[in-house]
Image 1 (cartoon, rainbow, N blue to C red):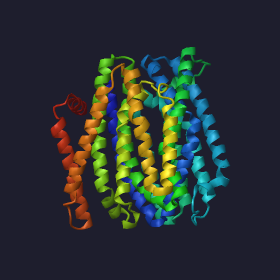
Image 2 (cartoon, rainbow, N blue to C red):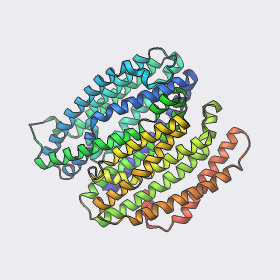
Image 3 (cartoon, one colour):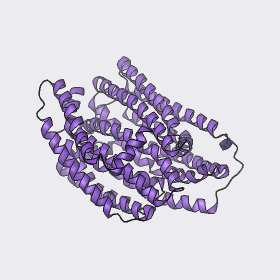
Length: 500
């Protein structure tokens, strides 16, 4: 299949599975809130953050090796693929063991992360189950990376979402019948293990030569490239975890576990949207990587501009929709007691927009292997984020944590990542990118304000009011975007791709 056909097939499978999974995840969260307390939600978010910090041990090996797989896959070099996957396996087994041992070692110190310890039985056992689930995933998951790098993300999506759907369904039944959080987690652990095991079997079938390892060794150039990228990606992982993986920790430490529970509902919605959109862009990465080794720079820049425009449209519209519909939706879904005030809702929506607008750039940076050039950026970003978030959290609570994230993004990632892409990936000037970014953002904020004013005219019962606001939010931003961009080449490219 062509690159674009592979990409679109990957997107279709990813979106279909994610939509079904998304619906079930909301049902599962509704049942969760009804049968368990908000403290359990907070605990869930807190332990997930703790383990994301421990995942630093992965060092970015996965991303570095996936990039190294593109060329041998394109050239059918089985000996290089076998050597790469053997290294991948050994590293991930080591990481899995580290995650388990280090995670267990933190068990006596859980009190440090929680300002007011809730009255939840078996907290240590719950944490150990989180550790076990995270650690065991490394023992089998590495082969799915080869499937994804080979532009077969749709296969991975099939196994992932069938597993996820079954997990949600069984967890709902378990909560309704038993109200037991331990059994709820057990279902997740068993389901995750089964998913990783089955995708490994599928990879063995697709690439039978992987089982015929004859001592193939990596060439010196391959080793040098991987080691260089791993060093850079380790810094990137530090920055990512410091910015996205510490919000719940800071809220739990400086505000309350209840605030983590409330935030987790908003985060679930943004994370679900991000996952849907991430699947689209992830489905493009392997094709872009293939494009990068086989096409000229002019073609590469042209495709990037279209992908970046697509990112602006979906994240610009979604950010407007989140700001207007967040609280009406959560009030209908869970109740008024689970709402944040509008300034906090605005900050959540703003951070979603800023993070989303980086997606096109990161897609091409990852596909082109540009990790080393901005290796120190994540460290600076981490220092700014943690310093600002801690200081502001003490004074402004949840809003302070979110403002800290905004500050760190605008002072680092906002300009460093596109600068690296244009200088080292495209060998082109970046002025046009920043000019376009500013104009598009101003347009999004202006349209967002108009949409917000229009949505305030909606009234009636809670459900009717939400429905009217949803219609207004769906129509106004997209109509403006369509009128303004319908003649742009980037818009025509996306429409052409979708038609195919």
